[in-house]
Amino acid sequence: MLIDDYEIELETPACDLESPIYAAKVRLKADVSDVLPYVNATVDKAEFIPGIPVLVWREEGHRYALRSNEIAISTLDDRRHAEKVTRSIVDRINAIWEDRENMKPSYDSWEKPKVLDILRQLPGTNCRECGVPTCMAFAAKLAEGKQYLEDCPFINEEERADKLASLQDMGL
Image (tube, rainbow, N blue to C red; front, side, top):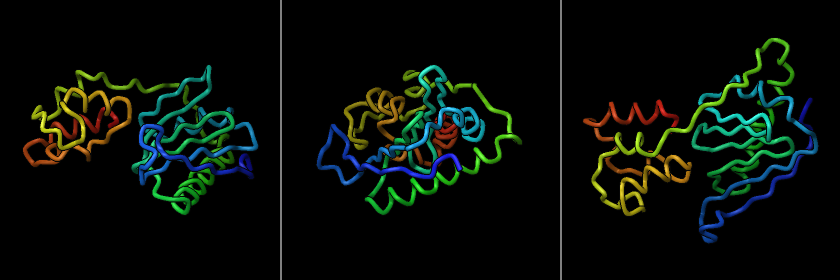
């Protein structure tokens, strides 16, 4: 077993200390650098930087950053949710490590979409209902991973299905 001990530290976003949403830093007792290329082979649209090393991806409403001695997890409701999501990702990483001889590691990295490419797919209403003043600002926040497609009230409209699909293909 690669990861057998860890500590979870919950944080609120630095920009909003009263936020009901938390992030977790999971401090690992083991160095997991060697598993990163194997995890990278199993996730979609991950940004992998071997020299640091860090692997960043989104999955099931969470953003993960896997480093040599830490897992960062975003968008958590409370400690119980953090423990559940942490246990799930730790079990998954351990299973990947155990099966690594049957896998081909991936050193490929997905490139983040450009803000203007995102903007071209947005409704362009500048409605502010997403919480930011313009669609350009929303596109920038999407690119940074600080907003989600679900935050735009118009992107899920039926006539925008092709635009939504394009944004999802970008990994947003």
